[in-house]
Image: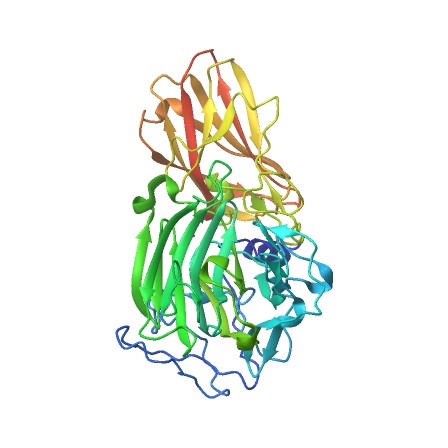
Length: 498
């Protein structure tokens, strides 16, 4: 594999955005220019530049781009042209295929409700008695029916084909004026972030009012109790129903925090320290745009349909990074993603199974007593790797899945966070690669302070670029039986400064 191809493969990994190129927008599409706007006024947003203005868009939350955001064009969309870009989006119901679910019954997703017109995405909801609804239930409701009465409502949903880890996501949109949600949200491994759920014209208001900008975080870990997995929610009030005017809605998602913005102004923020063990936003996520019926908010009336949830654009910006490793996987938070393969349509956020799309560290009967991913102690995020030394003397190894490491030739620095129990009998941890087979370095555990995290750095020279099946291997050595553990977290590899 050539160096350029290999680095390109590295840059496509979630959370990495070193050299994402900017392309001029298609003719006829308008750009958001730098601006500031008072959140208190919440005036309809209509700031657009002439189509010939070749200025890369910047977040409404940072109009002078002081933070150095880079637009991730693999996931962002201006909704130009006359149809949805299927290289970026999976359309629910396309060719009869659905990802995870068919929609929230009694409504059902239908591909023909996804429209791109006049530079806008329009997710249509309509009354369709002739539609062939699925003969099944979801969450206790039948598709196309409610309380044994026909409710033939179809709607639409799209999901980004790429995921990303940390960044600022933003849409300019207007909710549909009906008892239907207009939603901008994201899901990842065992996690969900609802940037907003809007309800333009609810028939009942126990949850979302017409002028609510409602954001939430959901916990999809297997131990989470269904129905009680919403770990955070907050509603910011608009001065008018969300279906009356376009606004810019944004969320900045970083390590341990989310900040929510309306028309460029910060309206709320939540931190990992607020949610403690309920913080689940540690893995790459995919964007969803859809509409649903919430039966507890009342049902849409036939005479108010069709209605459209309109989105001007959806953009994601990220920060440049020199780290060559997938931060979530090498932080022991979740699986390695192989986005060259399509996501299995039945895969749900809580899945812990290996498949072609997601793969985990390789635990088996030979190493499962010595290695474990734990939530008990961590340097960052919610998990770390625990290495036990209690049952034997000798060596044991833990390997990443094939293809989880991609390095060009050159000089690099590997860093990781390490902590040991006072009674640990582990002598060393060796770090190596498989293809090419190379020892990067060895950590002398005797030199690690007990009961506190410290950063260890290893400089190494990569003599040849990684093969496509390369992976990282951690090998622990214990010269005697004993007890205690060593913990590892946040493994990173970056180019060594000249």
